[in-house]
Structures are given as structure tokens and as C-alpha cells.
Image (cartoon, rainbow, N blue to C red; front, top):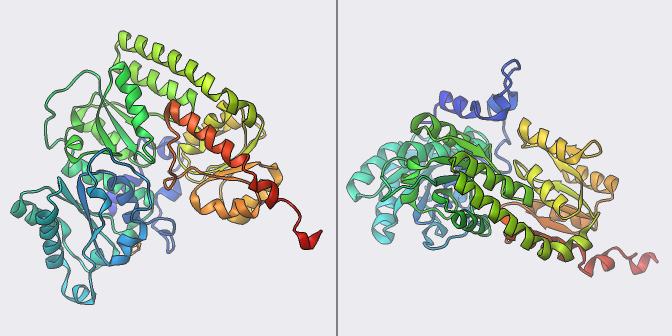
Length: 455
Ligand code: SF4
């Protein structure tokens, strides 16, 4: 798959994306403009493709580029596996100046050979990077030749960092799956209750309790794209009856193209918070269109929420009316609000930087008139908002923890690097426990005391 300007434009102007819904208005400019210098700060397109694909556990992920590209983000995300650990190994061709002058194709071929023969993975995903794309290495041709020679699927992922943002890279990763993986094998059997999860990366293992809930009512997750996935299950994904998208912007191209190609409808859901988890189960059951299944879902919701009320009662008492500032992206910018409100907390401000129009509408509805939305999240801006809102807690990505420390308030990591699962009903209890521990840690009383030399 070649990355042409046409392909990039197509991925940035997905009809399913809320940015492009309003036909009477111009398309969102930020979607289509050419990447500016510095656009890769916080994640380049290669980084985005690896975020989307590296969670496939039995695949060897080979980065064709200088060693720093692989080191850029390797292992920083907490996707967990229930079996193979091949995805945890970092492979790179580590190209040198010689390769830049004479081309890196041969080196890539040799690297694929070594990985295939030494580790026998289910497949090899080969990622292009800025340098190897600029010197014109034809990774498609090398992957094809190596695949035939070593009789193993070798999938080219054309996502050099310079083509654009992390989000575009996610979609390029999805394109590689669509072109080379989905629909290449038939599942041993199918059921009327087969679904795919798209855009769920099993951070801290939070997808497992969700799958358990689906299984309890008789829904089978045919393909997980891509958290804790096996290569083979993604090959079967075209036989699912429904695609459930978890992060709307990341892999929307997969959902829309699978609808076009295989007639699989898709819905967008969130697993955070009681209301969202309930809605997700109900919507999936409604889409699959079986009244008996819908009944089982209602029973499950009644049982789980009753159990949850008991488990959350002590936390609700301690967290009631505590004030939170939320700084995260995508669906989490609103789904975490509803989870916090389930605990009786007040979300004073949230970010809208990476939110779609639909996300923003949901935020508005949840926060009400008084809620603040943040377009930018520089440390100075966040400190200002924390002070203005008299927040008790900052919930954000790992890099913001020092901002919270400066403001002398507790911090909870909500992004990919976290080690605690917050999805599904069990995740609510985990989140309540983590917030409670952060808020009531005895350190804060000491940190906020006047320093001895200032007394
Ligand atoms: S692909 Fe390009 S932007 Fe991304 S880490 Fe490598 S050199 Fe940097």
C-alpha cells in the first residue's frame, strides 16, 4: 500500500468522522492541512501506526529505520497479553549511513529472514519511518518477496513520521490491516452473535472484564482490533455481525470500509462509567436484534449494578463533591466525566483538543453551563484552571503529573501508560479506589504545609 497524498486526504476526511458531518460547512481545516514542522511532537504517524498495531501479540513488529525511531515509543504503552509475548520484543533494522547512501532494502530483507527463522512469529509487520521512506526503500516489494520466500505473512505498514499526526498513523495502521489481513482466512465457525472490537488496546488489561460481560450474555468477540489480538483472529474479522468502535477517531476508516466491503454495521461505544457500560451492552444487543439476548443483557445490567452499588458505597461517601480537572483526549474527554459523576464527583473542566463535534456536544451535556472546556493544555494553562476551579484532583496523561505536583494536588494517570484498568463495572471500583487513595494520601497534608523557613 503506497501512501499518496490522495490516500492521506481520504483518511483525513472520513465520512464517518464528525469533523466532516456538516455538509453545509467547510471541512475541518485542521484535518486536511499539510503537517507543519513540529507536528510530530507528541507522536508522529509512525508512532500512531505502532500504537494501533503493536498490541497484536503473536506478531513480530520490525521497525525499518534508525534505531531512535523504535526507541521513540517502544514499550511505553501498557497493552497486556493473555498469551504470546512476541509483541514485547523490539525489532529494528537500525540503518546506518551506508544504507542511506546505497539503500536499505537488502538490510530489511535480511532482518525479515532472521526474525522469521529465529522466532517463527505468526506474521511480521514492517514499519517504514522518515529516513527509509525518504531514501525510497520499497518496503512493499521487499515484504512481498520475503513473504513468498519464507512462507509467512509479511505486512508493510507505510507510515513514515513526516506524513502527519499520530492520529493519521492510527488510520494508516488500520489501512494495512484492511489491505493485507482482514478477510484472508475463514473462521472455523461463526455465530449470529459475533462482534469485533475496534480501537480497544487492552491497556492494563481493561478489555478482559468487558469480554467477560459479553460472554456472559452469549456475545462472542470474534476479533479484537487490536488489544490482546492474535494475527489469525484479525484475518477472520470480516465475518463479524457488528463492529463496536471504542475510540471513534483512531480507526474509523476500518469501520467505514468494513461496512462498505462486507456490509458490517458499526456503532461507537465507551466502556467507562456505569451509564456508558450499560448503554454499550444494550446497544450491541439491540443491533444484533435478538429479544432473548436483550433480556439477558437487562438481567446482567440489573445484577452488575446492584453489586456495584454495594462495592462503591464507601467510596461514594468519601469522594462526594470532590472537584476534578480532566485533561485527556478522544472519547475519554467525556466518558470519564460520566464515570466521575457516577462517583458523586464534580468535573470542573475538561479538554476538547482532540474531541470531535459529537464529543464536544456530549461534554457540554455532561458538564452543564458552568463546566469549562480547555482547547490548549499547557502546564501554565492547567495551573491556572486548577487554581480557578479550586480542583482537588488532576486526571490526565502521565506527562501532566508534574503540573499537579506544582499545584500541590493529587494526580491520576488516565492515558496509555497507566497500570490500572478502569473499563467495565469492575473498572469503576478500581477507579474509585485509585482516586480515593490519591486524594486521601497523607502526603498532601505535608506538601501543603508552609515550609519551615517560611513560618
Ligand atoms: S518516524 Fe520520523 S518523526 Fe517518527 S520517530 Fe522516526 S524520525 Fe521521528
